[in-house]
Length: 202
Image (cartoon, one colour):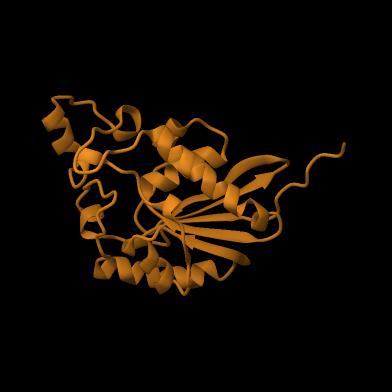
């Protein structure tokens, strides 16, 4: 049996532009925080940077910060609930320093240690990874021949990249991603790989 054809398309990941919460380091899961003026400016700058791609599909988290980033970049994205950010439970709106103080754990990290229930139930990193797997399944067909762009959130996209690279979800800790960052994933000789990562255009 001949080997399966290697996908020719590139997977373009775009983290939403700056929000007040991202600027101050607050965990922003399901809270629908808008872009700051700087975030809107950076989203508009994405348009020229995305012109080089042959995009067959553009999908976005339905949360306003991601959807608006896609719109300002010139797209009318398909909303995908599986691209919503990690549900941080009781840690929503808190900085890492605040969470560490509240837990009495100076080494707490969300990717390694997870979250606890609060006003929302929270998610495990494995549940986040399962959502990213569903997204990747949905875009696999278009990626056979053309490019796909996903507009979403920092932790979600880091876990999605780990899943794409066939790594365990906690590999996401090694993939830093700033607001407005653009990443390109593709295949080379059958191996999923990073072409570029966290390009903010600055």
